[in-house]
Length: 440
Length: 149
Ligand code: SF4
Ligand code: SF4
Image (cartoon, rainbow over all chains, first blue to last red; front, side):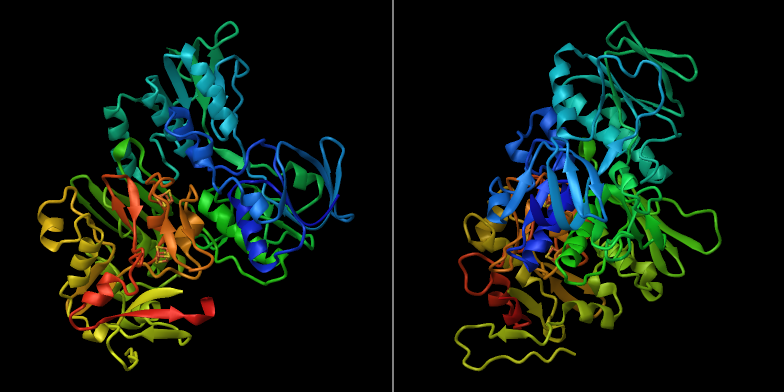
């Protein structure tokens, strides 16, 4: 078959690209290939699927008629085994050839699975896609006690789901505290506290070296020799980009597929986004993988515009996370702790269950953490994304009532003043004359 | 695309827009009942910001490029391609608050009862939103972006 646009991958990045392409080009043949058999669903919601709070229909990312409505040829449950960049073709598992004009790699990441003896036993799972959630769900009738390896986002998310299903959970985290890549010490401690209250046991500073049992899991052995009996193990160490296809195709790859600010790879007409890509991170000022849902969508959107011939630039993304497991709200972005260098400044505040922190360098925001009260985190993140120099108002960043009114006048005016294309309507219908808006 | 604009120079920071927004979102549509009888009390979707002598209300800008929509984990937050209005599907929203981190205006709030986002919906069924209609000093105006229609 032939298609103008070929998107490999059907999650946030692929959908973001498809929507942008259709905004610009209603007709050009658009094909999405997915190795999963489902319409696009929200991966972060697989934990709600596992708890039984949501069905597949209820975690769909777009309405069921999305593909028809947007005139998209959707090939679910098919794996692309090979791409030929020079010939502009892709081959599917079943031998079918697809000729394309523009190609997007949005294939995501794959769970990191460390070397461990016994990892092939029954009862060992990962937790990144719906099939993982289904597999764990089927297994739960036989499980009373689980060990979750990895205290990052995926680990905590599956932990919460398992607790809700009545399973006892022990989290084994290699570093000295959970959520250490996105939180600082204080915020990690607060998160640990709520986990413990929910009955979760946390073993930090250790790794699992062996999973034992005859055919099924019976216990795990830690690096200090301690054995923990359990009947379920979830390996949740994180994801790494899945660039095998691109490797084959000889694209430039670092940790992920390297893309420029147009989400374009080093091969003309070929783009990448999401967890498989390594795009610009505005906090670090360099390309890095930031495997989070919003960046995948925005990157896909930018790729889609460029694929459709409309130049668009990726503003850059950084790790942002909002979590609310076990009833605690936490938002974080950028660097969780200031590096041990000169020039970093940290402003923080703690009042009871509320903790807030902003990291600055040269008066630019490099990182933020909000625990408890997160309602103004978006305003801070907006300043961070726009790389605004906050020198004149940095003392107010963590004020209780912080908001746009604390920005210097030109900054908030720029954000609130209507553009000249806008007709302002009279406030009251009885007024005959049209109001004019003077601004300042 | 419609959105509400503020004339900061005439805003007196009285907060009536916020009060009338709450009434509009209430069951009874009655100011006394809304505040004294309804539980939970309806939450406002507009907030008056005050910093010494500067004050103005903030409500959703129904952005042309809405970060909240692009960041939503579930597809609950969406922008209507025809009206341009940004709204949240309460059935789909899981209250993960990712959109709160994404919105640079701080225009979204948490409804801790329903565990969903609440935001300005431009008062469905009204020609002119309640905040605009009830501002005593006409500091709020409804703007229409013709380009975006
Ligand atoms: S919620 Fe914020 S980002 Fe979303 S449309 Fe409204 S103002 Fe824009
Ligand atoms: S809180 Fe609701 S609307 Fe906001 S990102 Fe999460 S699911 Fe989407």
